[in-house]
Image (cartoon, rainbow, N blue to C red; front, side, top):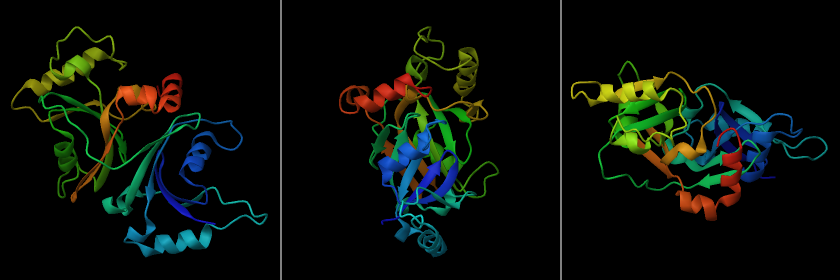
Length: 258
């Protein structure tokens, strides 16, 4: 049986499995007894591109079929600082799994950015989980947060950009009906602080993610950044979600993470 290697973001862990990605996503989000549900985000990982060959050896040694021949669904290989053990070049497709096990697969690519310079809202996913308002583009933000020697930095980080709708250009816009975020006034205050030319480029809105990601608020993609650069995973447009990916989108909107 083929052994797959996955990097889970919620929780952060490196997992070997004999299940292909779609089956693994369903298993990981729903479980075998259908008693617990939750979103799952994970990358496919190319084990040949890992600098630590001990991980590959452990994967082959421990991820073996059960005595009755059933495939091994999951074998945890690393649960601490797993993200930083996987270089950017080893990351494959990113899978976003709804709480009922639907899979949306994102390919590495180039995210299309709005040419207008406005404000941004980033949700850090791994290894830390604050929500941050920023004046920086995604590549600038990722570079700043992974810069070596800085007191507030991490070796590698996964984050996504969330929609601000009209607030991206006008922090005093009254059109906030589409914003499903708690305490809009606090969000406005954070954006107002960024208006000051001498202010820091980032302002923490929420210290840690206290709920699952609202898929309908994802603006344009997911990012993985470190000192070597950034990898982008474009998120489908609403039109694509409503047509090409409708089963996943319907599940995403009806679940807690919609």
